[in-house]
Image 1 (tube, rainbow, N blue to C red):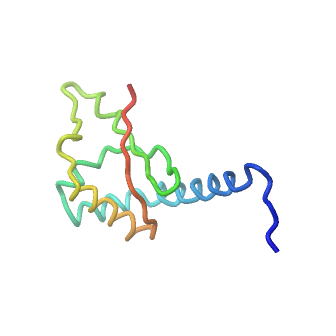
Image 2: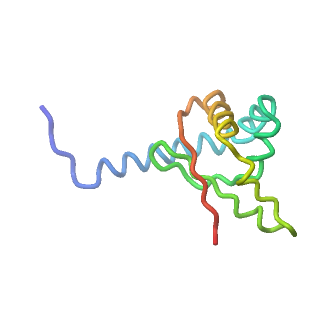
Length: 108
């Protein structure tokens, strides 16, 4: 017998799952970057300074705001391509078993 869940209950469960996945990924981020470096040095260069922001559903949110802190910047947005993203996602899956997509935000 199905019972209705209280309003917001499903949303809290999703938030909790996202937080647990985020904690797993955050704790494994160095291993993910090491894996990415072994796979594709150019992809590693494109993502090494990414900051983990959150996981929202099945999407990892990355920030590259720190790249603006250097004189002349080193924003590699234009250099990141689908192959680099695929390598990052593969490294994440291999190190954490998480199947995610990635989106980028930049503080303004």
